Length: 110
Length: 111
Image (cartoon, rainbow over all chains, first blue to last red):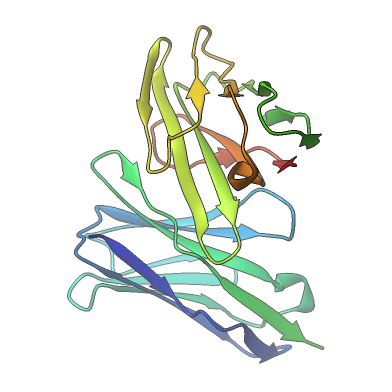
């Protein structure tokens, strides 16, 4: 069955450094992959989308890569700030079906 | 302001008492869906709708009903709630079944 894996442990990063989050998927060939941010008790908010024919996408301090050979997406936040602390969800999509990963909790330490 | 509105935000009820959680969007989106989120399990899709009068099951539809009589509204109905339906529920809408816009969530406790 389709499986999405994100870092299950929380990630602690020093302020100003680059945070890198991983999303691996198996038994699945998504046409595109989305990343969302979720703050405690609130709904996820869309951040970035990358298509299967794109290697990299950027938006301000955010960068997403998509390696269909490795079946992996990496999400980077450069010059991280305490306000970036949240849970980040990856969500591959194919054939009208989106599956959300369980998310990685990111803590940016001042 | 573009938004997805869920009501109520918090609900405590007892086993077997029918309830409805409303969801409304003002973005003229065709696609709407309901998710539940539980610790350790992530977001799981309950039902979705691709247009008025078109609904389909997601991954965990048992114990839930939905209807889509108008484009903007997509209520979630629990005919006979049970304690295992205690969860955080999110409604979402999307223009092209792609980028999802989520509501603020409804925290439901079934005693």
